[in-house]
Amino acid sequence: MNAAIALLAMLFAGAAVSEDGAPTSKDSGNSIAGSGVSLSFRYRYEYVDQDGISDEAKALTLLSRLSLQSDLYRNFDFFVEVDDVREVGFDDFNAGAGNTPNRTQYPVVADPEGTEVNQAYIDYNANNWSWRLGRQRINLDNQRFVGGVGWRQNEQTFDALSAVYKRGKVTARYAYIATVRRIFGDDVAAGRHEQAGTHLLNVSSEIEGLGKISGYYYTIDNEDSPASSTNTYGFRLSGRRGVGSSKVRYAIEYAAQTNGADNPVSFGANYWHLDTGVIFGDFDVGLGWEVLTGDANSPGEAFRTPFATLHAFNGWADKFLTTPAAGLDDRYLKFGVTRGRAIVQLRLHSFEAEDGGSNFGDELDLRVGYKLNDRLRCDLFFASYDGRNDIADTDKLWLMFSMKL
Image (tube, rainbow, N blue to C red; front, side):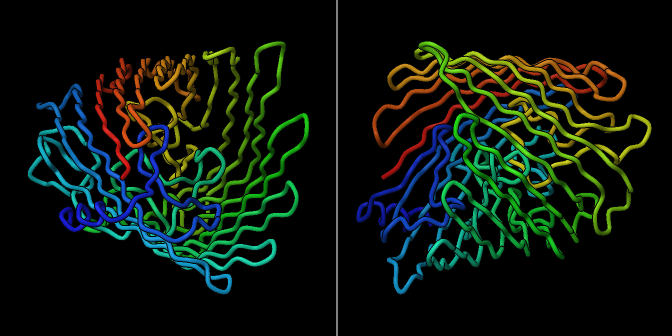
């Protein structure tokens, strides 16, 4: 597979790479990108040292992504994207969800080997409407509730029918989800969750002088994980305002959640997130407070986000991919500087239980990145979690090279 991709790379160009080094392609905006073939690579070393697990994880993996975008014909076009993930060096890691049953002595690095169709869909665009049918990436708002998990080598995508309606400053997005193709891949049951009536509705508008406001309703009926079946509705406001020579950025979000479909637990939970900061010159300094409620005495009643790009929230060490029974209270500070082709980011988190206030520990996250040219960038990430209440101390390090051809 990699040999064929390398051959095509000599003939075509046009891939894209996101700021965090993840190979990208068309997103859920349903825009027409023009015809052509694109290619991108991400080569990554990941190291994990976790208390309570005998060995340290060392993983060297290569993601190769080949994408084909057709021309527009009578308002139709199609898009196909194939991803290949290979172990190309160290393989001392547990790929998770039963992918590597002979490597359970290592911490999880959820990057299993495999070749998969990441996206394959048909678009129809006319007037203010865009329709998409097939396997697709869906990123809504900041991906706190629905996202592609682009951090992992095997992305999360959705077999779905989706629609986007745009008029003026208003955008409405809807998706009916049939299957969720999760990061663990097709070789294990956890890599594919069938849905039986999952609907996503998100409506947003730009309001002059205030920012972007979104309202949403997500109802999930997950046949393979009934505990993930929920009804969630909420709103999000985000924007920036000039203050002298600086800018103040802000975001506020609230959501309420109840059990849905065949969820075995009847519950109600809430979510809120406040984030603000000041941008001056090359610097961005901010703080935030994110809360997912729970009940320490009733497991299964905590707020959950099964479709989220979870790595972007609650610390890069990924200690809270599942909300603790007592909920989660995450208070954090952020510092960032972007100068020329270089970027440095620092985050400090303090975690507590939302119900009862037990100390869950602290985390330090650091990123140093450099864009060598328009085709190649490198990034170093580090996360150090100091755990409390029987949550294991964990250190993680990533060194990534991302390339487009």
